[in-house]
Image (cartoon, rainbow, N blue to C red):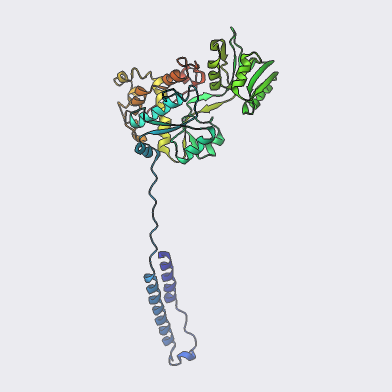
Length: 388
């Protein structure tokens, strides 16, 4: 309406500033005998028109103000209001997310949720676990039913860019590998030839296995089974030399064998399958909290800070430790957390190494070696920015 008013006034002003030249006397106005009389009469008409136009404009009802929607609460605000972090997990998944007879959850993914609850509430028990199937997970996250997936499907470009979701970081480096009978001199994966491999049919494992042996011009035979469990049973019965699957699944399979120590998961991977927490796009604060929780746990391991010595570390003279634990500076300000949030996480949940060993490593039934998941300073791929 305001724009219409100004356009109308501009148009009327143009009529006044540049009036048309007086034309020959018109019969209707025969009493106006001088050209100046016609000009003055035209100006009078224009003034009447201006007044009438302004009257109509001012009398028109003003448009009703558009209602401004209330800003949507951030993920952190929703979590604080709810009083718990809701994690969607693939369960049961031995070592990652499992529930005991008493209904208590544990595992690598669960501990990451506990770390986030500690960072937010200073209470690792303020979590809600939502067991989800593979088909349910993404929809649950997109709809807001869960706050994150602590470990979703392996990170790929299509999954990262095509579903309005973000991988916050990598907490576990996985990939396809081999389970073999332990030998004094264990062959490397690249040395395998003339072997029979058992694996599950109908997955990308078949294609990746074929590509691996074709690239090396090595012969092999594959035996396909409806499930990994059936493939492992055939392997255990001596029907094949190897089982091929994701290394996490292979460690679970080995733990179920009658003599797990007689078998080994070969250290080499033939594919890459990095996995980690997934969050919704559009909430940078929550994205950063999730990412830096993992980074803080890695930094703590690298600096030698763990759940047992966290209190003593508060008195450390190391600038890096003091910043990480919130003694100096304000590590949590940009995240919307308390300055000592990382200290709380390490104290109540542990650093990355502690969590790995407890849930997946030598202290667990899976007895998984760190390998790619070791710190960068110990031959692995785990690396975190410093807390500065």
